[in-house]
Length: 189
Image (cartoon, rainbow, N blue to C red; front, side):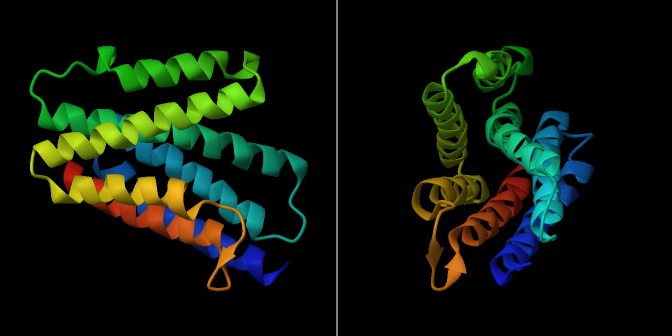
């Protein structure tokens, strides 16, 4: 196992750990938010298993990639919808456009050309993060705004390819998301 794989296993562990507490403690006040954190935590947990060994099985690599995609689509949509539900009285989660969009994308993902699927994923997760940030900003919730900024920076600025300061960008990405999870958890608590 290379040092880069080990560092990514560690950063995935930090990301997974940052999602466990919100997933467990938000279940009663915000089941939808809890599910969002749970999906992120499971995806990162699979990353720990994948990068914590020298030669992961192809099925583990595929499972990690699929759950990471699901965390991007469903995890962010659930967290954003939960924030909306908390801050706007009478918000109906059954008609939430982010959750409907996530369900629709889950249903048609396999039928879309790869570039279209990638664009739809970016669009849906982007809408979820931006609307969470705007909603929190309008309600004076700096924790939620911080979470949205950290999520946006992780995907748009940091990315997952290459390295920065001799540390793989994917590790910076994981650490930024972990901090974003903490900020979103604070906003939902």
